[in-house]
Image 1 (cartoon, one colour):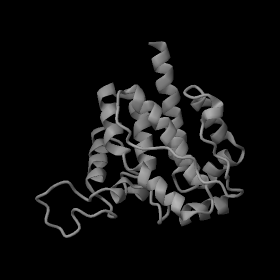
Image 2: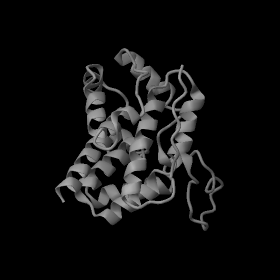
Image 3: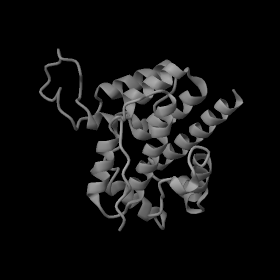
Image 4: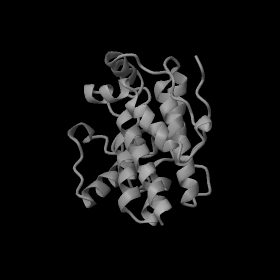
Length: 216
């Protein structure tokens, strides 16, 4: 029982750290990142799940806050928006007659409404800058970290199945952008950890694949 709890605690820390890396980088995040504290903690917790030499490497690092913000703006800020709704049909409701109902690329789709419902049920306030993107990857990872410590296995399994099956397409967009590989490497690392977690919760089908980032 103690080993299971320790596993959940280390996984929760991993996804909390990754959640921070998907937020717009402010000075406080940069301070922890620039001294390698975030990445060192990430690797330390992840080494409880994988051999260190088998972990996806995050090596293409920004060298300053402004550069990190620029990389974010040029990738996660638009071309590869880390928001679930964008990668799925806007709604599965076949009675919806809106012209874009079965299209991708729109915010506030079914997944966003579901996450908003979950947040309200747990009385978790949505930060103002995520009002229109409650299914942002940073929010999803914070919820996953929370569920690992406080929710039943059935809820965790369902959450994993429902809300992380779009990461392949997201990673592909990052790969197609070329240039700095930082966020692609972070995403491959995330997929690696999720693959381990889904196997533990008995999710047999692959909800994503993992490829090594293209080296510059």
